[in-house]
Length: 229
Image (tube, rainbow, N blue to C red):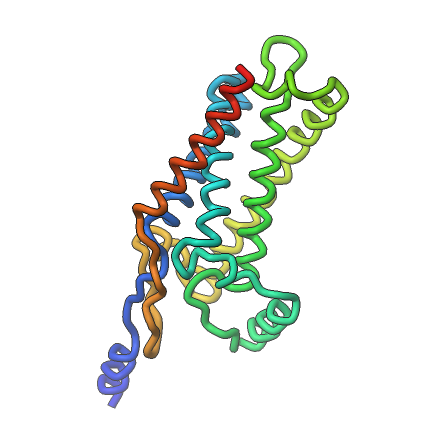
């Protein structure tokens, strides 16, 4: 009897391709670059720090565009919800009946948006930051001394805020893994998520489109920096 029940349950579960390759590469590249940016800043390797920040800016710009015209689960319209949906998800989580989601759940969506905005501001403000001794950000000549000072302060304060957000993100992922037995790491590596029931495969955009967007955002950042140099 038990074996029959298990066999039936196995028939009702299957791997669904949730995350496309561009989204996964973006995620892990961002993890690596943020780590490089933090470590290089601590070690006063400012040339590496600035290069990492400029690359992060290009990646974040890519993700913002990909969130509009990319694959289904990568689109903001697919996972960014309003207050009512977030409260309903929280209520369901407390009752053990939160609706299953293929991509980001409503709480995860808040973290995604917060991190993207924080990294965009952090990378952008870094372009205007000066240590008043040896190193100036590439866009410092475009700003007044007061603006440079303000943006420099913002850059330093937001660095701690980003570390806090990253820590909360890691704790949330571990919480889902250990408490809810929901492995969020595996799908971001393999692209596939184990789901129950009949679920349609999310629509995926072309990797060639992602490459074109990345080339455009990287080119835009390079063009802006070169125009000032």
